[in-house]
Picture 1 (cartoon, rainbow, N blue to C red):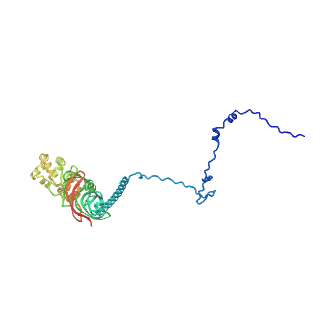
Picture 2 (cartoon, rainbow, N blue to C red):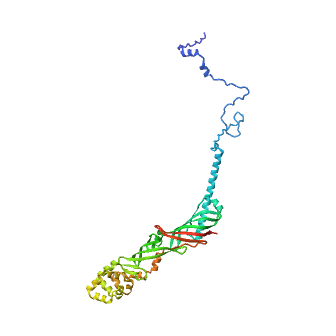
Picture 3 (cartoon, one colour):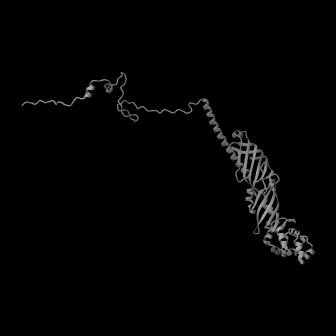
Length: 418
């Protein structure tokens, strides 16, 4: 049997026109798409095939070359002072050094001020440390020279007898120092000038037991106005005080014009003079003269008739004749004569009569015990500065102002500490 021969398959697909066009040109496009073979230079080592980096120390790469991976180094920033000239750098260094020196000087100054304040407090036995301010700069050069140009001291709330001084301020010049910046042992003050303030606010608070208010009246006068309780009655009180120096370091008060008003009925002035004591006011004396019954009771007391200067014969005539009585008591002179009678003396012999006139006997008894020295002590606003251990303090020029009493103070040859 005959072996069959394979029959080739004939393609009946139409020809592609783009292939015909591509066959016509083998120019730049082929060259661009072809991969160039690397040029090998003789004598140069062939570059190792790339492999992942091995970060383990001392290890070799897989190809056994033994080369360590190259480390990347960061580039350091440029210094901001690199572009400055040497002169500018020197100026900056000097300024920084000066700042440190000034800081050290201020520290030494604060330490010295605190030490001086503690010594003043202990030396004068003050309740609180004063405020000390050392003037001048630099401080270290002054302390090394052991001489301070100026030192200011302010002491608040200084206890002085019955009152407190609101503020004592002083400035010392040419102060000599014993010790260094950190070992201040004492100071010598050749001259000192300052001022003492006695505040009216402090006086009103500290002497408030008498409910008094102190105000300045110019010059050296102080007015005291307020209320004074006596035997359950609140009496209006007024007084005037004159401030004056008492020795070299003291201030005293001379109190005058003291009076206590019992409403519009009577006025009490402490003392033993004829014008002092308990007397009717003009208003109450005029009213009493119009009250026939009470006026006759007064005229019937021989001591009262004698005090007002009426003869016994005239008194008897007025008491027996109403027309004479009205004529006598109706004159303005009679009211003035009644105002001269000291009712304290009358209360001793005729307490019932004063009670009918409207007086409280307990109040009269309390007024009789209220002496002038006792009232003056209530209004005393004097004080005395403590004596310094060395040197002298002197008060001068007393002035009464709106806020209080101001006194100039001077000092010589003072010393604090050792």
